[in-house]
Length: 344
Ligand code: GLV
Image 1 (cartoon, rainbow, N blue to C red):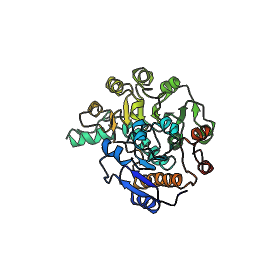
Image 2: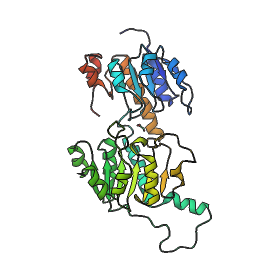
Image 3: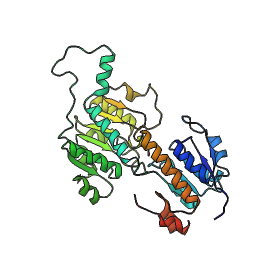
Image 4: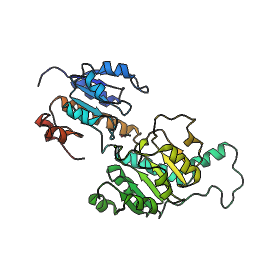
């Protein structure tokens, strides 16, 4: 290992503990803005001499970036999802990819529940009614919603976040169902949830919550056909990735009242603006991709991404690798990386 400090490119100013950690070991080149993503041309120039890249989900890391970064050895994504990264291209180039699982699990599950409750009990619609001066005298069917307590919760995607959403359902005495590519006995043991084929879950659930990753197999998995299978009292929640849903078909389904309501943290093309048709629907609660947005969790995510980056560049065990097994199968990557491999 060379004693020179490795050069890294960081695509946004991160919370201070992460910046400090990087600066201790690396020569940091930074897109020094908090809110605005780095323009593509500056990004491509920024990675030219980088051995490590710390990226956010706003950056596409693809063949073009890899070609612009001949010295690149590791991409540390500050997100659990890594659909913004062409992992196969990274693997073929011998570039490690890491993500930030675990540290955001509970925070994101909390947000899924916030959306379930808000959509079921018409929280945003109620506030809008008051703000519009339209709150008339109390009457028996004013702003009636649907019950959460004792209802059936169906989670699509049995990863860490799906498990945490289900676990919360126990406190609400819910019947718990899940669907996943493969049955997940550990999740069943931890939550008491029962596996259902996808369409059965859609038919049986009062709340359908999507936590699956975005892959070629899951893109567009929820559209008109799937919404038509749901109950007309069902609440649909997406805290995963927007492109899992065919959004125009969701708009039509919500207009038709099946599902009855939706809570969305993610959208096909982000950010959306006030003209987006979903915002015109009283039965849709929209928030701006804030699943992991607490200061504690975002700081942990940034720090974990920084730790992964430094570990990869100093030959220390990685905390949360994505493509280590694939790299090892190709005979690429340092053995020390593998010692730290954990399946989180
Ligand atoms: C956020 O969406 C993430 O994948 O961490």
